[in-house]
Length: 488
Image 1 (cartoon, rainbow, N blue to C red):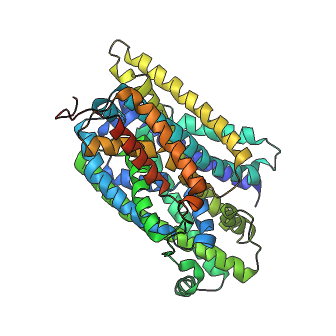
Image 2 (cartoon, rainbow, N blue to C red; image 1 turned 90 degrees about the vertical axis):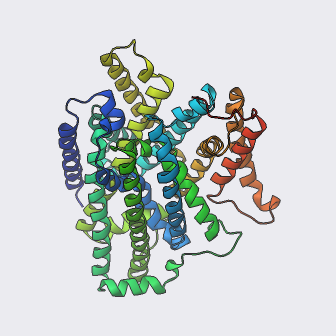
Image 3 (cartoon, rainbow, N blue to C red; image 1 turned 120 degrees about the vertical axis):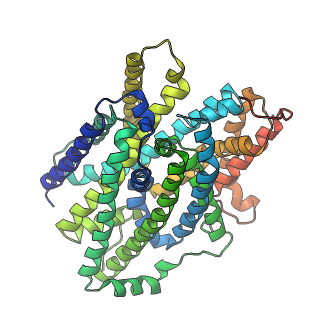
């Protein structure tokens, strides 16, 4: 496929996003940037969140993951359902009752200054790492199939991608993202469906025959019953629930979209609808992964060294130019929502949680807007640097690394919110940073030596739960007597 054609499609797609930006960002304010003036239609948010939650990581890594793990990832997805129900019925009512813009403001009202800053810091760290991983996938593909052809350095490719995201989120923020995500989710889903159809057609099968082949193959195994396996189904089920809670319910990026809805009732309807669509889409992605492996076997294709490369290699090199173009559009559509949402939420959290511009009545609105825009540019630069660094150290399936990192960085947030919601204890606030630092460190060493310590047991995604428990226990050690009621 001609790099020029790929570039033209990429630019056309990006131009469409800028048209939506122009339509939605007119007369924007800080309030529209942060929470969309609380006027976002819930069904639009629900649909657009599919693209934001999937990202380029899911689009590329999960299909390749089927080769070693089969459909076992569905156990994590089923766990997500319980997590999303918890968000809808526990966390969203709390956020709406307190009328929060940054969800980490809750920690200040519950515990104090240091808890608040610690929670916000862990979000910033988690989101910078996670967003960088996701953007790397897309930028690396663009580098290989477009920019290498013109001998353009990887750094320049990253810079172009970041600048485009910066430009179309610079003014409208979450108000713009709510609508651009719907377009991008649509293109991503169309790409998945068309990729499956092209594979089936190239193998001379119909949909029923392909479903039968997948069902009778080793790839369709969903529940792994060996307790010491990292993919043991109960571990994945419970881990999925807590992953959903922390990576959606305790994540400013995902909750910022929910908080832009008109009311708590609308936000709940958004979460319920999103949950149903999300389960179906993840199943389709795993089905695509099985189709890719069956296609490779039928055609005698040598599997790439990295499973992340399976989808792009087959789509671009073996299914023809249409399939390659469909893949690239789908990948870009999956990557843009996570990238633009990350940049906007990082800007929101830092502006509110660390600079406190929402509390400064002495600062004119125009000055606050200028500060927010400078923060936006700053985080764009940080993401640029981290993506370039990540390329030098990437050596395994990105999604596995993403959740491993999340186990360390989101675990303290899980412990903090659980302690705040389910106990009436206050804490010695100044010790919270130490507690939340020691918990991930302990988890790290336990994960390394778990086979020896726990007689062959290997930690998987449940490392997140352990991290949260250790943080919870640490907070108990530094608790104060019950105060009778939460601090106002």
